[in-house]
Image 1 (spheres, one colour):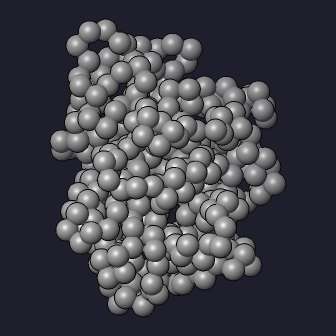
Image 2: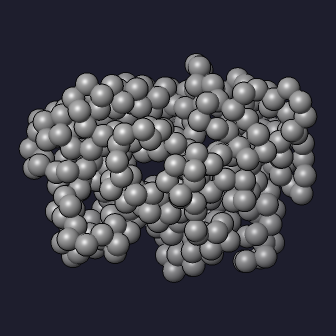
Image 3: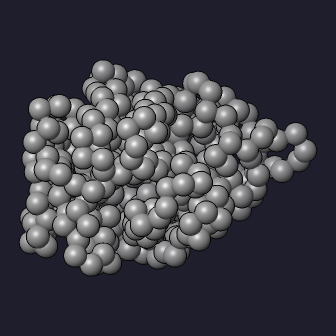
Amino acid sequence: MKILITGICGFVGNTLAHALLDEVADLQLIGVDNLSRAGSHVNKAPLQRRGVKVIHADVRAASDVELIPAVEWIIDAAANPAVLAGVDGLTSSRQLIEHNLYGTVNLLELAKRFRAGVILLSTSRVYSIKPLAALPVLPSDDAFRLDDTPGLPPGISEAGIAEDFSTAPPVSLYGSSKLASEVLALEYGDTFGFPAWIDRCGILAGAGQFGRPDQGIFTFWINAYLRGKPLRYIGFGGTGHQTRDCLHPRDLAALLQTQMNASFAGQPRIVNVSGGASSAMSLAQLSRWCAERFAPRVVEADLQPRQFDLPWVVLDSGLATQTWNWRPRVEVEAILEEIAAHAEANEDWLEVSGSQ
């Protein structure tokens, strides 16, 4: 099997590449990356040593994409993954759309040319902000939990946000760029006759992630906590109760293998892929874990809310389980320990990944 992974030197693309190389026989793997993300350069040589052809290219440039040789599958892991991208004063809204939408269009044109299947890695942030912000939540054990009283909007349960939850705007510029990419991927697949799967992922985390406050929060928090860097609970009363789920990309790789070998007929094209409610953790709970793993320290409170922040975002991946017999195997404790061990072994990781 010949597979292209875009963004292969990023955390997700790199982890998927190694996982697929470990599991798929006779795999020919090609990767493209523009190496613009701080830290991504460290992943290139190990991939090349395993026989991966790593092409320095930018998916935003059609002329770069046109030079990619024929493949059977395209896994699109190239994106600007920050919900504040384009509105934080540090990044351009035009660049965000070029990365996340126009780049996808170029890859879909490549898929059309080779009749290659496409797997688009999407995000929980395609779901509507206003109804999520209005969800009834209660504090419990230093975290928000969903108050499952009658009257919850369609697509919400204690298991999390399901695929039929609203995707009506606003969803952020980041969310809308991924949602538009989803629609185009499905349209291209139907029009030109190639399979297209959409995997909406929760927070992906593990050792070697390039953690920043606006993305890779589990990795950033553990590294910053260990190094004594400033940490703040932003908004929500400064409690740190805001809660997210957590998934290791190795578990995502198992689903990708199933999708690439499956019949396209009759299967849902879009599924949530997450650690789900059993992996959900608040920042306060993460700090508590860090205090037990390292040493206690104080986290400051910042009462000022931040744009697009939500109190509780947990994805329900029940449809993926029902359709693909998929479920996450790496438990959240193992993910956190993996990140902590990597942080201890790499004292300058925040600097390498451009976080400090």
